[in-house]
Image (cartoon, helix red, strand yellow):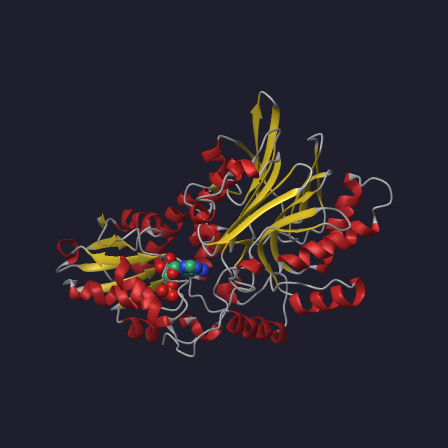
Length: 483
Ligand code: AMP
């Protein structure tokens, strides 16, 4: 999963890019980068948070009224500098690109690009595939000046060739800025604009909250398979190209997106409250009656408060979080993950002691967080602990860019609910049902592949195995399993 931004203004946009990336930091902490363009590309990339990468950088050295930015959370490729984005090439045009998502026919496309277009990939980042596919398509149409129609035709061919989930922003030197999504619109991308004395500035970003920070107006979310091209005169043109129907990633609402972002007309915080309220039906059906509902900070607050409201039980902040400890999920080994979880959360004894506690998290993936929290709550005197997941059981790997791609690590792919409760030591585990989640989104077709195993783009078992194998190798996974 990654965060991307692109701006096209009249004055230098580097400061805008850095602010934009900071607002999207939750989408990736492995690397950050920017590229600007006036008469040439100027690029800066580094490992770590945007604030670290750009700390001692004089942004004046990155002149240019057009620019792109990226924060990276490595799911495909390695988490080293070679794989950090943006990428840029100089032939057949100067093209710079950033993307968020995951290409699923990586090996097939790599072979095709090599054998048919003589393009050699330099990194293991799937962005290169999209970039070279688009570049090859543009090359075929470069007689005379490129027009919007040439660009849209090139995107259409690219969408046909590249399978998977991707939202991309591209600078075509001297021509303009292009944004496009995959034919299912799996990953979010939103367009914004700002009116200034010097004229209009256009922006693209993974989430709308970026535009709140920058004082832009949100124009709209991109549609599945849509391309928007803004030419050098800043005239925008759009076309829906390869459209296969919408399959927006529901996990963006559950976990990934910021609570203050609006996606497809829905405030993420509001969606989480709705999911929490819906959970109350399943909870009631168990016959269990908690004394309090607590959240796992910081992502589960809205679920927990919605559930508590519906159950008529007090919501309390029963766990205190140390904000200065990094994310447990992306630690490289299970021992390290457990250590981070231990340092991060501390129960407030007086709040949970002697109580039947329903503790709500957005999801259970490996079971590391839940197991540790149940233990902590018991040690703090909780009488009973019910672990509640706002997401249905995650049983299948995500192949579209969320880091849950190794089946043997996913607890619900290996255990039934009773087994999970035993493993994490809870008196009960209560999951949102997939049917209930689907009901909440019956007017917005979503991707539920990590719960159901139905991948909207279609994928064979061999290709799935291959993705899993590569994932294990590229992350240099340890033999040590969580359960
Ligand atoms: P686990 O501890 O492996 O069961 O993972 C669940 C915890 O990780 C929850 O607290 C989530 O907030 C968080 N989480 C879930 N999915 C992801 C993801 N793809 N990347 C990072 N963190 C995640």
